[in-house]
Image 1 (spheres, rainbow, N blue to C red):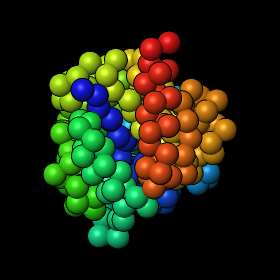
Image 2: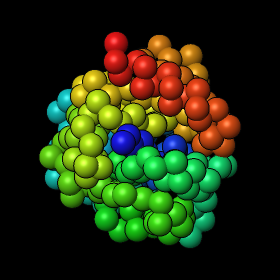
Image 3: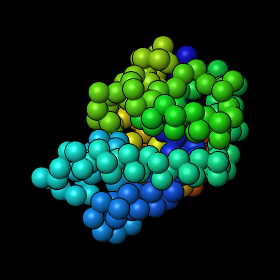
Image 4: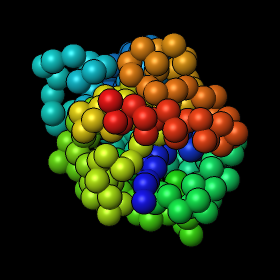
Length: 224
């Protein structure tokens, strides 16, 4: 038995740039003019870490809570427009049909997770899901990945992770779990491979088209 853990934002759902705009607007509302390119590179960090990455040390915790709340409200406006990335549903269904345990490993809030699940419409293929409530610390800490492994009913040696950011790769790597990269979140293949991805594919459809190769390579790396 084996399993595949999936990040969601930017990996299965086309939401990364909506997050970028929501963070950009939230930061501007509270007096921070941060270039969108900088925000994009921080996407994948949890909301408890992204402001440290974007604003540096010494910012006010109370003000941070207001920025995070503004981001959540601004992003929620886009929930009805969320769409799965090409091949996302078929990838989840195919993995499940092959007998793989499929777990969504995301630190999205519960309401946001519900919107993502409605978008994917693949509940029948999922073994388990995670949310922000399940992790003491967000990526690149491995907490949410560790919970996903536990809910899969498998060991870390029996799973691979699929993600679109360097933070996904780092979080999985801290548990010695190989990570397959996808570039549909906006990072290039070279950067994902440089940070340790076992392969880099354009989107879920590209990964599905090369699934045997991708899984074989990833599980082989887990044995090294």
